[in-house]
Length: 290
Image (cartoon, rainbow, N blue to C red; front, side, top):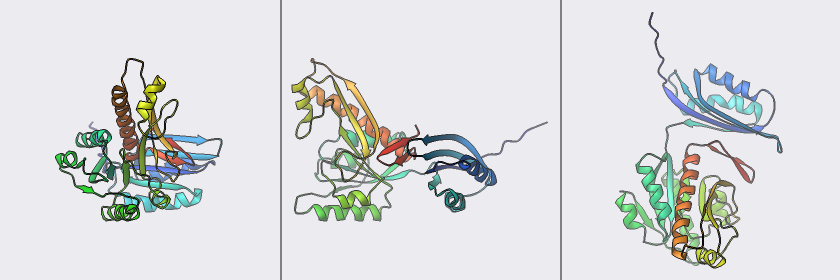
């Protein structure tokens, strides 16, 4: 006797959040069964403090279908439970616009990881308020655009960014050490689809040359935080953080180098999880299904 293997025709991801109540998992499982879905990965979380339920399912289908059809079909289930949900092809890359100023370590890390397939993104454009990044971007065969920003041209520069986001059908904007504060209006426009990276010292040092300030105080830990961009500077919902230990033997320049390494790693993880849609908003926090 021989057995046949049914090859999957599609690989999809469903994420959802709603008020926690009985029957959610059953309803989702029934939907998948009715559409020939086979679960490859499933994660869920119940926020008992706020009574919210979060779920991420990676599933394959043995029937010929597409993400748009499944998304529309799931609307009935979502309406019954007042869900916020997304459903898309698991292999689809996020179209990502990267913004940078003069510090290029995070940009270089993101571009390298993209070329190796480590990040599920495609980068149609890099925008900078300085020309420094152009040779690096061009070496990867990507488009670079220099958009200077001054107090008198900030509104014009942000309008250009919004225009490019729409023209290029951008899913995600990454501020890879982009040293400009976005307006509240632009932050609202990009809500949930713009990620920033910044240092996170213990204790914290604000203003110019934070690593040199840290050196003067003799810190023993330095780190970085990746978060969604909001109108509150560096206070958006946190996606990822990490630290590294340092000591008295490190010079200010060595502290800067150590900080760059942590920043690049933290930002790349945040971008990876977002592009795999493993990050779900939960008020001022996030649920990250790693």
